Length: 503
Image 1 (cartoon, helix red, strand yellow):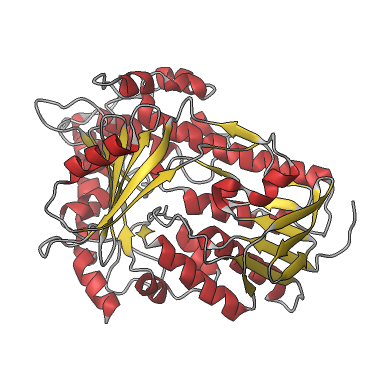
Image 2 (cartoon, one colour; image 1 turned 135 degrees about the vertical axis):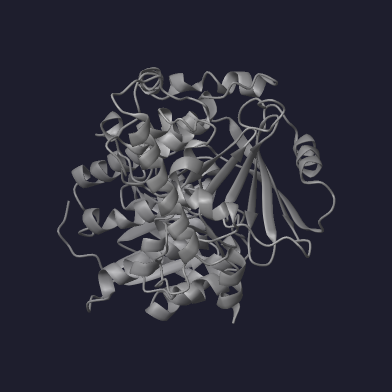
């Protein structure tokens, strides 16, 4: 252990994770006159995965903190706005209609004597879905509106929102901004990682050897640096989340299809398909169980789902490693992004975890060689974050009543893999899901409100009786409807927002 100040940090690997981390560390250590040398080594021969093109809403706060101009960011990455996710076909059809529900980002305060969820459960207008009855975002997307008003300041809107963006362009944009801020960019490939016990002394490249106090591993699934220090350091989530492969297709829009301001996640035979609209094209992909489908079968099923009316620009197959490190920080090396772990992209949490991993360094990386207790704290926190996200993703699967394939029959049993989840689900049959049910976890983004949208969207509605009147319920629902209409009147169409952005 040493209290020696940090003088240098080397990041290996670019893409969104590497350049987000580089920007954050440059601002953290050097914006107030510090002198920490931040170097990022990446090879143009090793492309980024570049298909995870949706975010959660909190990524706005990272971009704002980095001082990025939102309009420029959106233009440079062909981005659109994201109000939430529309889930389709995750349960059996009802009266011949495909099951669907909407999960927005917003958090709604109660507008009556009892909470909005209990109001909806008791509602005399039970034909309205939970999102339709309580969510502003759900109302906006029905009318092709977006979360922005004409006068919304940067990073603010009528409701919280995330982005759909081109991940490859995102990496390039962040690289430009990071280098402008003072990050040193070395374009080369790492040929060797030199170690002394569980510490990295240097990395070797054709352009020379690079020593550093701290090394950040952003090399993707291969974890080039962290694997060299500790190989037996992985915990798999593939029993409970078996979708370990994906086939992604980029395609053109037809002339009459404006980009949607929400993601679509449609369940197929052995996984699900994402549909993400950028300003210039649509990104789609089938996340599936590679133990049940071959690459050829998965691509055929995806193409059949999409139809053949749109021109395909690119098709790529991906292998994914589902799980996370036992220790993200070993010696003087910290794994961030895919090097640290990956939860399937159902709720678009990839950049969120990068954000969390990088920002935790502000409180943990206080010297060139912090004590092991600090590393343990960092590892414990990130493990908790992954566990929290793992549970929330499992929730989407375990509530299904689909039994048409073995994949879905097994998915219905996965609650057992998240400690206490089945007990909570059983309790939520008789009470609303509330904050205290999840308190004490490592929750970083998904709260009881998010759980309710999934639970009630998947027809897991509690049987409760509360002392209230029909008049009180109707009045609360009317206030919710008025709130939706007010937001609708204030908002722009998504098409108009994108047109304004392009000027």
